[in-house]
Image 1 (spheres, helix red, strand yellow):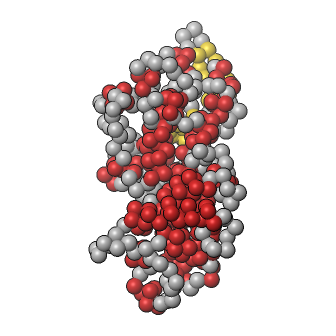
Image 2 (image 1 turned 90 degrees about the vertical axis):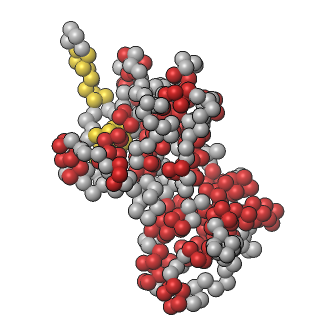
Image 3 (image 1 turned 180 degrees about the vertical axis):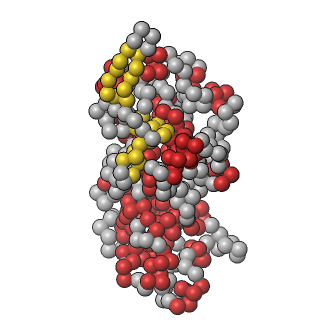
Length: 388
């Protein structure tokens, strides 16, 4: 009870109103929510093969209070801005984050949840969007309730030292569950606990292989050794949760800094280019003739024919020139012909999706290079404050 009252101050933790009791039970009065994360993923599966029949109550909820919900981006097959917000999106237009923020609040209050799982992440309509709230924090410790199969950290299963790090392990599994539309990094229900206890087990990243930001964060969260997992407040700043506008601004800013006239030192420009250009094959891939040509993945033949100067001056095998192309087209988007604007999509999310769908490795490859070479430079420092 004390944990509920202590954690009640966070908007991302279910609100506690009071208690009543009789000879047999204690009754908790908690905030009413519409469903949990597991229910939400079932209502809006990522693909038709994952669809399972819904109960009448959830079918009604989907068609009334939770209608018009979009969890998946049609162009990239990645989480929509709404689903990112529910996971954690501190830089979004919603100006609040959910799951990870709730966990940060708990850990700041020195409370360990111990039973994080999709069923304990409650969803409430918070017009005009949805909000995710953590529930049952600390109750499992008091009532000696075991966590559901597949969500416990190795140290819980092996009866080792239990710290806040075990919540981070559970969070990693939940993020994988959310991004993949209901899958688990440690396999099927029957095998999960055994796989989690096996230090040598290697999760299969195939389902998110084209989402390197997700692989990077989740793989760090589900490390076998508790001391190797990041803290919740570090997770909050991971680039997985950057919105389309911030990602685009970062790529454009990097392109700007590579120009000759930028104020970035020549040494750092050289270091950036030395690290960036060898990533071209990974970012762009080779065509049928064994050449790296990013121009072949953008625009269609009609636009190239109608606007023959659109790609003039760029080197199509260069990551630097790809960044400059993105920077120039984003900066001058409003001045482009309507035909080109429609091709690229809306200025922030649509434009970002266009390049993410064609070059899914681009953002995180550039992020890693900039972090290694210029993390503390005044020109990039704002992007790395609070993170690793």
